[in-house]
Amino acid sequence: MGDTKGGAFDIEGKIARAWLAEPLNPNNRPNSDVLAPWLNGLDITRHPRGMWIIDFGCMMGKHEASFYEAPFAHVLETVKPERERNRRAAYRNNWWRHVEPRPAIWTAWKSLYRDADGGQTSAICVA
Image (cartoon, rainbow, N blue to C red):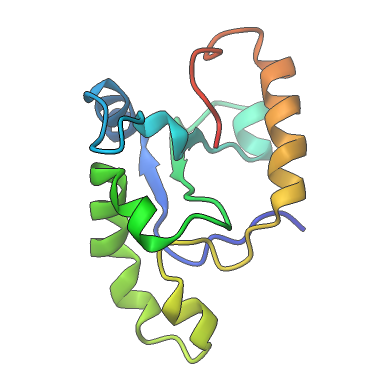
């Protein structure tokens, strides 16, 4: 089983590209640290949807995540209200993170994505 996001962490490509074009955040880091193309089997075998996903990882604290201003604001507005109603304390308390992050899957995926991509988005850091 892959990563379980547990909220509206997915965004349209148009929004992701706008965020990727923004200047560096207050932490002097780009939004590409926390944005990645989001693919499923149909995106690969048929027509891609052009979706992206926000992922602050499984170790980044809320304060550090907040420096990624646009992605954090989106998650604050769309994910946090839903998570506040969740019965699981870990999901409520860590609302900016995916509910089941699976770090080993992401590490493997980064390698596969870069190899399969053919350099099309090699300038983008998949976080």
